[in-house]
Length: 280
Ligand SMILES: NC(=O)c1ccc[n+]([C@@H]2O[C@H](COP(=O)([O-])OP(=O)(O)OC[C@H]3O[C@@H](n4cnc5c(N)ncnc54)[C@H](OP(=O)(O)O)[C@@H]3O)[C@@H](O)[C@H]2O)c1
Image 1 (cartoon, rainbow, N blue to C red):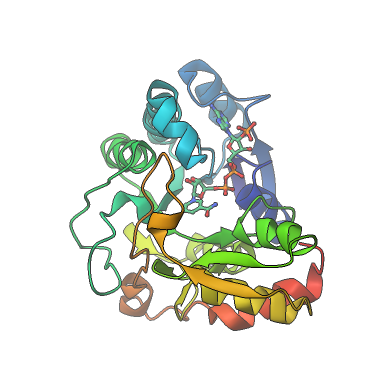
Image 2: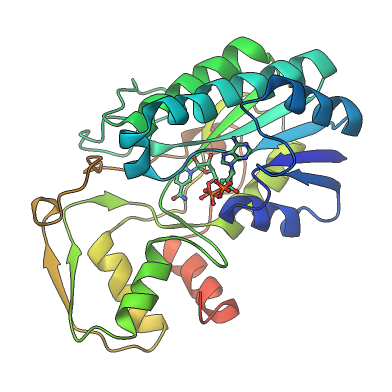
């Protein structure tokens, strides 16, 4: 299968390039294909003629998006529209990566694919606009929403913890936000399955099980054998330009509906990651 991966130098893109190496993979990123430029995206898809485009490129710095909303929408909405249009024009299937931030984050259970969206941040609103552009531009699409990602080299919460933990005598960690810590390796494994599965629309792809940031940090330091004293704290103690969702949990209902294997448990995926990448 011929694959084109946008954002191939990013955290998820790098893992996809490695894990999907059995396919004929072409990776692009900002330096050779700026997705805000329709001509560059069209040329990349026209020349490689992929069967599937896996679209990871995005402006992902959530706080920067609040300050630079024009750029956030240019990359996350217009960029996705350009990718979708090129896929539609050249007959490629599109698998696009999205986020839990499309939801308001105030539900008292994990979000289903079918739950109403309601982003509270510029990042979330721009990614949701990107989802809508993908639906409009490419009939043969699958939007995979992921959350709380970590992968080799980062950047991620896990990498911040390992760095801070190396020098701090104590750390305060938010304990009133809940989500599904998810490895890029687990996402890549399921994207690989989805390449051949007739799944369209939206599918949530997060590791099974849930944790607060505090519980996630406890497990990171336990596996890293770093006895860093941790104190739980509230979101209000760490004000940020972009509000963080209290509930980021995603329910992988579409995987179950299509009889696809469950994503790995978050603790097992984290243990695998720490064994293979002890320094992150
Ligand atoms: N990380 C998470 O926790 C998380 C959670 C939920 C969803 N997601 C989604 O997962 C996907 C992958 O995220 P990630 O963590 O791998 O992000 P990442 O490391 O920031 O990778 C994104 C890549 O896209 C590139 N890019 C930015 N603007 C571009 C443009 N105009 N044209 C082409 N490439 C451009 C970036 O280049 P520069 O680095 O040079 O800007 C970067 O290499 C994104 O769609 C993101 O929204 C991530």
